[in-house]
Figure 1 (cartoon, helix red, strand yellow):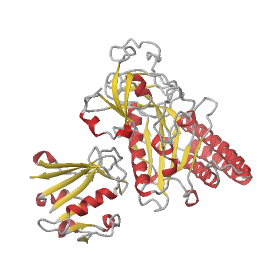
Figure 2 (cartoon, one colour):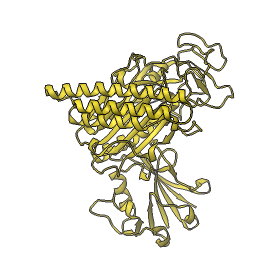
Figure 3 (cartoon, one colour):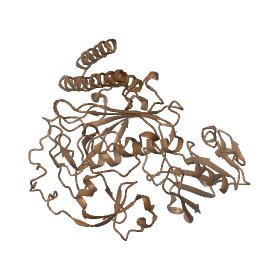
Length: 135
Length: 365
């Protein structure tokens, strides 16, 4: 499974059961990244993917259990901590902003290698950074 | 309007009685009750303004939205109590009321407006309230706010404070939301920590949501002063996205006006190094219980080795007028600043900080 997660400057993901932020350019990048492959998420995340071409999105509340090898998981409010051993790669999108947070990205990346970095301007974010981590 | 005033006064009376009847520190409750009356007084002022605006056909944004908002504000002051806020323990903010604002359904409006309470007899700010949308956001770079001296503005440098200065002029409603520059009704004395780690994340969250969706966010910031203190103990920040009924943005938090390592005399704004070297004020310290006797004013030397008033550093800096950060000219981050947000500045570093700029954490200018 390949995780896709968005974080702020402090690795925050959510605040008060809501995503910290969203950006249509970031969503387009996710869809481009996962084109032709299965992209798993839950109903909460699916609601923000209103773009017409949503590719191979599969919705399941237990998507982290359902996702197989090589399949992507877009994670916002799901608990990743129980499935870290099965994670093959992580795409971490940085908002490069400081938001309030009460749910944080739980993976210690010190044992991972950042294999690729990409920066781009979002529709409402000056600079979004995408990092690809491999073991 | 008369009925609304009568109802509001009943709420104030009820709240005051409730507070004095509460268990715990009666004196503290009484002083909070006084704050309720102060805030409510400001609300009454806003009501009057709103009435004047509507009767004269003024289209400055204070129409039915403000009236609706004003009644909501009274609910806030009626239900929020500083005595319910836990001591500061390391997090710059704490959720209040289950993180649900005290707005009513009627308050939610997709008509943009902004409203700032009149200063009270001590010169303190009251409630700032807005329905934020893209049309309330800035279209030009922020101007100087250095001429405003909010109550309790006794600024001192501490080496360990980001940007050195303890205090910032803190916008109740951030510039990025309603484009208010040097509006004295929207600026309070707040610590650097309170401003950057406490309030700014909520402003960012709200601003980015509005920019992305074009939706409105009902947004209210209430400074909480204990008794006659000149420095607020903190602010109550409430926000709810309108068009999606809080699906996108919903929060209700108290942000502590503290600075780790510094003890603040909230009565005056004086400050001193925390005696244990690490703890901050608790944001609920009354003016009489904090010494602060050895602190200095902004124009004098504190005489303490860890504080410094002297030394105004000057140089050439590159400003990012969007993120409000400043950098050394050779900082790597400078390359990624868009030309429209980039500005070169030569002059005193202190002036930049007073205008709300933050030093880049990477190049440390």
